[in-house]
Length: 352
Image (cartoon, rainbow, N blue to C red; front, side, top):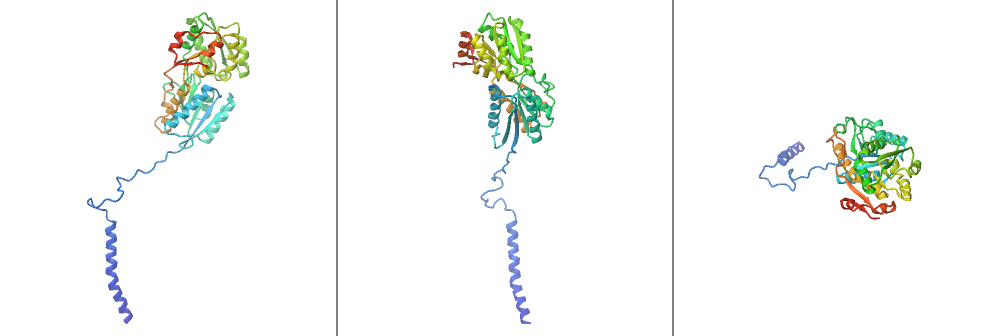
């Protein structure tokens, strides 16, 4: 009996205390009114939650290694970094060279497709064709492709219509052939060596033929199927041509030293389709900066990766600003004096 009274007494004391405690807790959970002292970090001042950019994977397929295509690749990667896609952080690259083999180009494209890369950069026409034949789901950007319509990559330059678009390196063939007449006014015949397996090369040869007559020139062509045939083709033209014109043909440009060796020994001037060939030893070009072309392609890639555009609706782009590049040392080796009028308007003059 006494024990029961003791329990009742404890209950009378504890219950009011428990009620006060619950009430106090309720007050703490009530939102503070506007007059309350703000906490160290109110919702308005809180930093936005971090939004990590998804790491993307880009497969880069290059048909062959030579300075122009290397420059396009490096220009692409550099511009991607400037756009916030730093290598091995926001983006991972899988870079492969087909070593001038179409079979290898197809294998590279198949690997990229099975790896489900987020985007493919195809450098040069054959690798672009291999990629386009392999996947219709992955966005493909090409660069260093002369005529993407003729190559079957896009339906139209302004409206590609599929998963492929990019930048063209169609060079100003007529302006480049005019350089031959400036360097050697009495020139009558120009020799052009090109790969029979490259669509972009045939396009340039046809363009040269189309404008040659009005320039007072005749075009003599020699088609090759491998790098080992380049020197033989150049030698076969000795005594028949007054100058060589090297288009942006991947096979020939990768073996340009063979053409230059013949040209220097026989004092035949060489005009090229792009500036890296001039840096390698040709005398002149009026044309494209492949580093800038690669950077231009990177800007297109960013729009695709961010979902702002689709290849089907992105017009194929071309480089607007061309420049005259001259190599004085090469001119000396080929027995040519570069006119002062050309030197005066050159964008770059190579002295060594």
